[in-house]
Length: 321
Ligand SMILES: Nc1nc2c(ncn2[C@@H]2O[C@H](COP(=O)(O)OP(=O)(O)OP(=O)(O)O)[C@@H](O)[C@H]2O)c(=O)[nH]1
Image 1 (cartoon, rainbow, N blue to C red):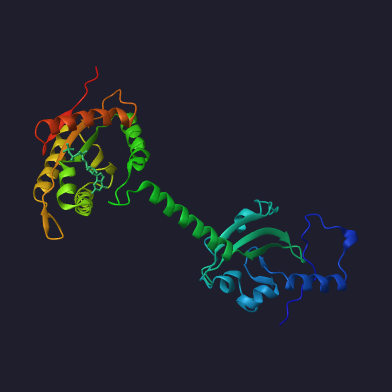
Image 2 (image 1 turned 120 degrees about the vertical axis):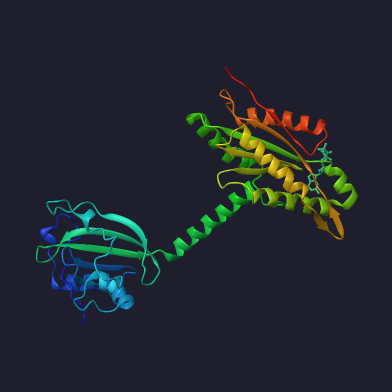
């Protein structure tokens, strides 16, 4: 059955001088049926569909006295995201239109909806929705967002090892330092530097050196907590930032890594390579303002570990009165 609509009082204050005539009613019908958007009207209380334009009937079929949630969403009852409560105040006085975007679960397409409470021909309050298909725009937005995320991940990640890079270390590490400062909680920083790595490159080739970097990185990454940060700071140097970690725990963690490295043999093109590393450890001091303050101490400890014969850890803490 063809839906007949005599008029929709779109203006808040209908102009009595512009009362609809049969010609304007037919004209309005033609306009609504040629819109490239869904237009429907439903009863505010019962949700019965009172009108749907040709666009809606083409996509969702004839309303046939059914409710909006039956025909537009195929759900069991009023939609959990129904906006009716936003469209009128407690005295049934219409609010300004509510504009929002959502994905229809029936056809999976995205719509921008302009919802408004208006008075129907018989005076009752109804819901008028004009929904424009924005799937293509949304798809573009989603692709743009994904590309942006991909570029951001690439900018923060080390291509060879897939660990965080130096930039990411500061981006993610600074909030951890701020949090530890605010709550006066412990925070440990461990610097790790592979020993005599130049010799590995010179003896087995640069590709072998790359493979060592990859395997050592995977070994560390797989054994830290989710809340820890591990980054390749450059070359064969790595930094680990461990929240809620005191001196004993940091030393214990480093001992674990030393043991794992001792047991590691990297096989590359018939060669068996046995890498080792030195570690410098420090802890957050009360007056540490920036990660660089901790990095300086951990670096000094690291180079002491190298001077003392490599393959070991050294700790430098700062006591503040
Ligand atoms: N294969 C490979 N080598 C790298 C990479 N980045 C830096 N290197 C090499 O790492 C070596 C570091 O050498 P050095 O700074 O002398 O340190 P080391 O030989 O490890 O000696 P110590 O640190 O004193 O134990 C250099 O030869 C760099 O070329 C990389 O991405 N891949």
